[in-house]
Image 1: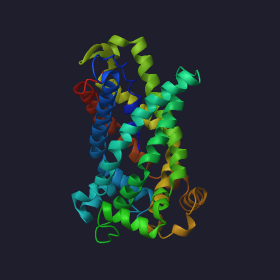
Image 2 (image 1 turned 90 degrees about the vertical axis):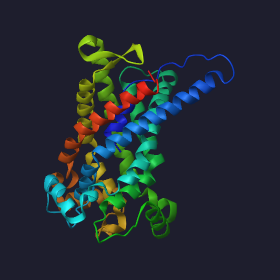
Image 3 (image 1 turned 135 degrees about the vertical axis):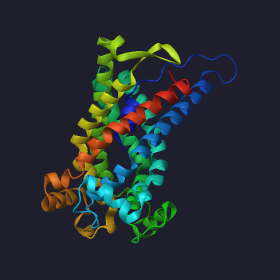
Amino acid sequence: MAAAAAALAAAGAPPAIPQAAGAGGPTARRDFYWLRSFLAGGIAGCCAKTTVAPLDRVKVLLQAHNHHYKHLGVFSTLRAVPKKEGYLGLYKGNGAMMIRIFPYGAIQFMAFEHYKTLITTKLGISGHVHRLMAGSMAGMTAVICTYPLDMVRVRLAFQVKGEHTYTGIIHAFRTIYAKEGGFLGFYRGLMPTILGMAPYAGVSFFTFGTLKSVGLSHAPTLLGRPSSDNPNVLVLKTHINLLCGGVAGAIAQTISYPFDVTRRRMQLGTVLPEFEKCLTMWETMKYVYGHHGIRKGLYRGLSLNYIRCIPSQAVAFTTYELMKQFFHLN
């Protein structure tokens, strides 16, 4: 779903909400705060994902071994897609991604703060460990809430010009519902997604949050600066944010990537010829490993994710910091 959303949510806890006098009081202030947080995270996620949409499309094609591009690498596929499908082919499925990533980023951000507070106050766990736990729980919550949208986005991204099964987002929803078991058809591949998201989101939150807190504690002048909307709040400088986010995303992606490959193949379902051999998570992993091995199977396309990390984090953090100041979240 996504290093950008996880890193954004790890960027910092929301400030305490001041007491408001008069009608509406603190409840209204809290409502407006969560709304502003929702918008800030959603806008940042959409900008980041649009920036790396061509790389996301190529990743789906490579992970599932699309027969038009299965013998190509990352860069050769990036060149081949525009030749075969036009430059807009690089953005196929991005509309469904935008519909998904907006609530995904917002849900993950808010869930992370809620779980972090809950773990600290109810379980008495603090330090860096509570970031790992809260991040894992927040990632899983966001995935469950937005999974059908990810399913449709992957189906659309896998299609090649001239061989369309689905004409658009609504048609894809209707077709999957009618032909693949109703509502449960939208949750194919959920288990490897959950198992992959737990370490992915958890490690992302843990790594980014730890790097941020350690950096601001030991070198606040060198690495940090006052927030423009609240001089009392210290935030990381933009290039330091990029570095920390890139490291967090790379580590988390390496750990969870085999689950991501498994999820993609299960999501594609009947679109793939080996559908009947990949009905469960274990069968899918076994099939990919047996036919393609580790490097060209379970970790196929990983280099693309490393390439995606820097621009994705750059846009995500830059946009989010601007939105936080614009919506006065600091």
